Amino acid sequence: MTTNADELPKRARRRTPAGAAVLREDVTEAIRAAVFEELAAVGYARMSIEGIARRAGVGKTAVYRRWRSKLHLVLDVVSAMAVLGLPAPDTGALEGDLRLLYEVTSRALRHPVASQIIPDLQAEAARNPDIAEAFQKALRDGQEGVASKILAAAEARGEVRAGIDPDLALDLISGPLYWRAVVIRSPKPPKGYLENLARATAGALKAL
Image (cartoon, rainbow, N blue to C red):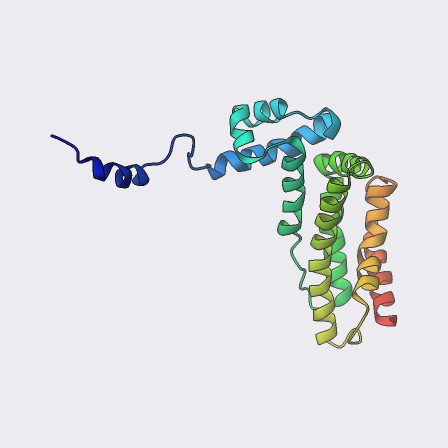
């Protein structure tokens, strides 16, 4: 059987070009998970593409197909934190919403991986503007999204006035817990702390 030479370009276009294999999502997620584990284990400075690939159970080529450097890989993973965010509580009351948010956030910040990664990225952000921007955006967007929903619900219930300064409200809601868990790296809050914090923050928001 002979092949018409004029048909070759059309057939070639229907083939998957060499080296253009579809990137499997399960491999991508395995690499992202390995980044968190590797960051917690050795920190950003000592982290390597080789170590990430080994931990993910893939070859280095699989990593480089997706990200061209360690920096771009970490920036992508950190930025993805903002997309995941936190679920917005809906207890029917401002104080209840804040308490639930603080309980979830406190547990997340005390997780062994998070407690290692966040301080390390903070230190690296002081030296690398790109990491600083991505890290700040991830933290701010995640907290800002849930805080705005809590405030909107509280406003609809008449618990807070309309037009509260969103930046000030975000500082009041997120600042104390992050100060305790991230900056001074205090251990688990004492009994009653989160309940009292929620009550105090709700009172402050109502007074704005």
